[in-house]
Length: 353
Image (cartoon, rainbow, N blue to C red; front, side, top):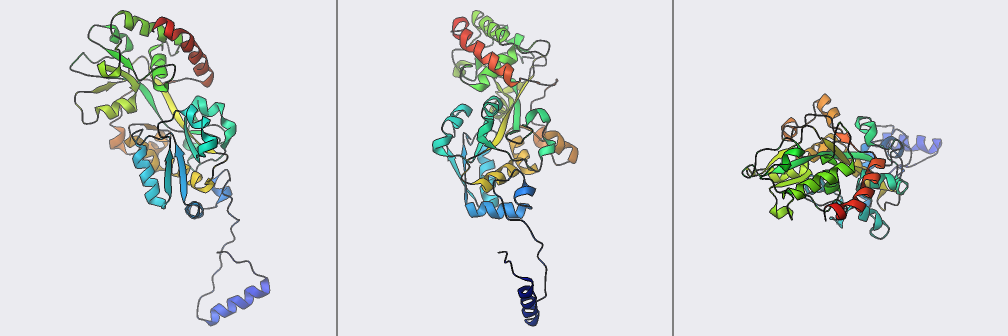
């Protein structure tokens, strides 16, 4: 506890301590903690003070974080064990849009959102720049610190090697022997939407009408499966397909050489966070070297991955397990996503059913 005294009282106190045989020490003056500050330095001065403030709050509420999604189960447990803070998990299977919709009643401290949802709701977030801020690519963060990417992945083709040859492009899936499924309804599920967009890439550009046309051709060829259970191929994020392939020789993963689509999930702190210090400590943990490598363990691609690689703190054994991509990924802008979603809502039922 910091005690403020007058100069005279300070002299008396020092003399008393010295008389008791204790050495006199000077405590550097630190400003009061501001748990809603926009950076560690501004609000807490040191990590120790941030940890202390978060422990006093005692808990953190997260939303839309399934424990089997990009290793979030281990990440949550590691955070709780490291800092002695209880993590309350509400609606773990909620979509990004749902997380925002129920935030008023469930009061989460932090969000994990698709970028388009984060951009549309930036006013609901408290700016906070983590210590690893400079390592996050500029196109993956809001310059004011309202949101920033924690991890991402590339759209991939997961397949059963005993059913058909390894596909190297989406066009291969039109050949006999493939039964193809998306990871849900592309009008509702982000992974399925991005699967359609990945299949549409030509010359480095994604266009929704080409993606819908491609899946129409799959259906006409009899290669579009009725469900994921009936499929020999699932078009999904590489971290999902890589998790399916872990320890399973009957499942392989390929990223098409000519159509690499990347997407990232972003982190944000609620402006109304009931536990503002714990929320900021959570962000610091996720973007620490340890937190980023824990995402990597879940086959996701950490936002700070290149910085970790340059500094020698990347877990290279885990990185070697990621599916190989042979081209720079196309990353859709929010405007492109909005336009494409609008087209799919109009055209999918008519052309695919």
